Amino acid sequence: MSADADTPCHAGFADYEAHDATGLAALVRAGEVTPDELLDAAISRIEAHEPRLHALVHRFEEKGRQAIAAGLPDGPFTGVPFLLKNTGFEMEGTILSTGSNLFRDVVSPRDSTLVARYKAAGLVIIAKTNTPEFALSFTTEPDAFGPTRNPWDEARSPGGSSGGSTAAIAAGYVPLANTSDGAGSTRLPASHCGLFGFKPSRMVNPLGPVVVEAIAGMSTPHAASRSVRDNAALLDASGGPDVGDPYLSPVGAQSYLSQLERDPPPLRIGFTPDSPLGTPVDPECRRVAEETARLCEELGHTVEICEAGYDAEALKAAWRIIVGVNITPAVEMRGRALGLADPLSAIEPVNAEWVREARALPATAYLGAVNQLHQTARALGRFFQRYDVLLSPTAAELPPPLGALAGAGKSLDAFYDAFWTHAPFTCAFNASGCPAMSVPLGMSAGGLPVGAHFGAGFGRDGMLFQLAGQLERARPWFGRRPPLLSRGH
Image 1 (cartoon, rainbow, N blue to C red):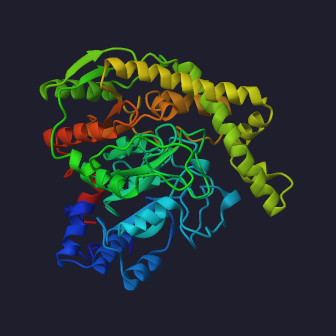
Image 2: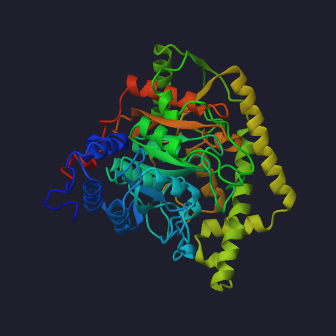
Image 3: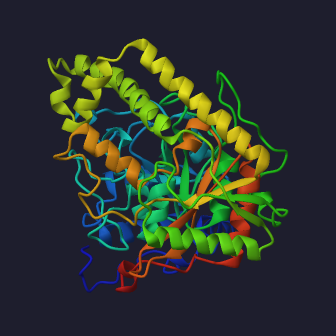
């Protein structure tokens, strides 16, 4: 069914978008709607907006239908349709192509630990979402699959690397979806799509059973959502150590969802409106951050302009080394499996340049880069001895026009500088392992979503959820929907 068809696209459960995932699951438990009806509703919205938005790359609704027929587990999200990001998350019998032609036909032999936990929570997994090649961009425009469009403005990107997931939520396919975040890849696209995006503390969510950690521990899986409570409840269902994990993240005595029942105590909030790299910050992004700071003061918190105290230039240099060295073995191993003399010819030119650069690095360069992550963590640790929260813009720019942040036609240097200019605030929380979130508190004058970014000390995920719940109550955003959905689809 095309988006221009006269046939109504709200098949299945007509009030699907009026509820978050927690609300939909409650209706299923009460017998007011069936999982099949929810699946029909999700598929009707997908058919209405794909392939124009191109949020999905591998669809398998029949697996969702089979899971329903077999009997879903009794969990917090029983019957709710759900999407996986197309990188790092294995689901048995589905393609995991990682946004790349090199991996286009790879089929997962098993469920990853996280996917198994999603299924146990009752989620009905029906597709993989678009992502840039190897999840290495803040725009979702892989050569292998083409660009994803932002439902708020189809000439713009939803961001990346979890842009397919956030575009799908914003377009009403599902109320929440899986994401991952290695430098801001949950939080940036959440900001650009008007959603709540949460990056937990390192190792709250496991990456097993095969992978222990990704990009030196910086990549953290979780989700974007329309409501805070969905995000918290999902982390309750998915979080916790996996067998053989080399280290653990602190876990509070209370569930994350229960933290939303009360406001946080008065917090000491450090506010950094300026880019730590000295690069420009769009006035609209700064305005939303400043309005958020005033809102926090109205809610009883203390806000003070400050600097975070870490070396952002050194972190930028370290991230480039770590990512290049981490993607190189996977590219070379896949090339050998396919019998390719030159596997770099099968990946995007900017990423091929990244691999060639990594091949030439000495081992001491990688060790130095990892040590720089630790230095960043030490600096943030000192910061969080003085403050409870670090507030900043999420992005330094509005949702980018398609092509603006893509690697096509750019050298690695030019691509990488644009990457960091767009998002100078978020990566410190990947380097340190500390939790962080983007909260959809603002809109630009032109009607584009703008998020505010909050980070906290390691293991203080519950306190961040408390703050998020308080902000959601003070400035509700759930009913704010893109123009795409007001045109009768």
